[in-house]
Image: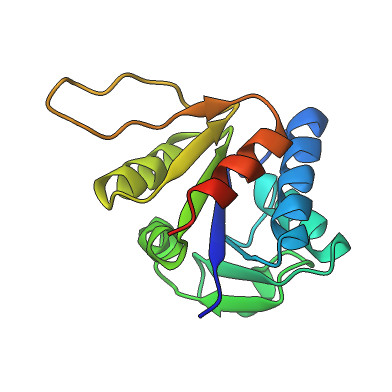
Length: 156
């Protein structure tokens, strides 16, 4: 079975976050892992572009019912027609996830990952302290290399 790293994050992003996401995608592919994401723009495009530059494979789980909505660096486009409900497919398809920046959609994916006890690390993403009764948290890192190393170390 292929090991998949989920990259979740901002639908639109500034150039510094784009570069981070590109580096994450590149690093994921360098380790022979498949990148799975939402298949659209921003962080998703950058990560897929980086993965393809390193010779990797990319999967986009799309919110729409049209495969042609995927970014140009998605190898396998899966059209769900599910809107944001497709976030669960991304989370459950990945063995480990990296959250890069992001808004409420990313926060929802983080929550799904934590609920499913999937290893997830944040890179310039949400920072929060769970209530005491919650045993799972999301650590944060500051560089793309640290994010990839963390993901590799936590692959299930």
